[in-house]
Image (spheres, helix red, strand yellow):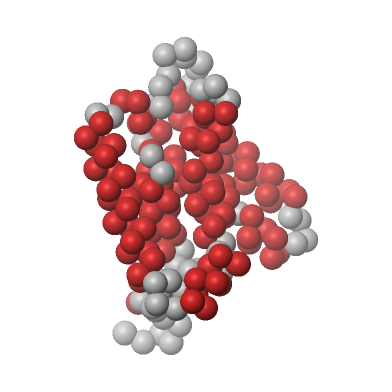
Length: 170
């Protein structure tokens, strides 16, 4: 699956953080990282365990001491990995999610492997719809300046909603 993780991570960022300055490209990269590294590592449980995003957070925090802008930017990568864990349902398999604390099991499979094909297709179609919604609502379809800003800096600017108002009004 690809579009499911792209859309769910972008939508989750929209409604949980609502910060247009976050590099959404790194959120997407982080959301795709566990499956890419799973394939590259030959199926290591590390890629879907809580250790990967937690270690990523520690590395970013230590590597960016005294560099606030870099920290703000690179924190998006482990946050994207956390979104993947959530929307993949890795937490439903304690041995996988808490690896190696939950024990090492040779029978651990990715959450995707336990889903029927129709559900995978439905999730990917929902991801396509979510990507379309992000594209339209962030103004990427109509505004070449916003598209360029997204490709250059990873910024998505949505119309101000109640959670983003700074005037204190109702």
